[in-house]
Length: 68
Image (tube, rainbow, N blue to C red; front, side, top):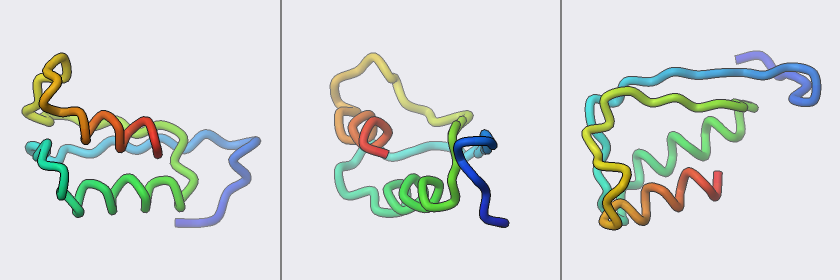
């Protein structure tokens, strides 16, 4: 992807991972979030995560999103 000025451009990405593991060692998911940040992605949208986002068991997944 081309470099962008993140103060003037909003880059949005939509990904269908067909399920995300809430396991605390889900390195593939963590890598994807870190890569999105490096690419200047301002909004990350994920479909079909197969997670109950109100469940406290997904603490690590929610934390990765907030940190990124």
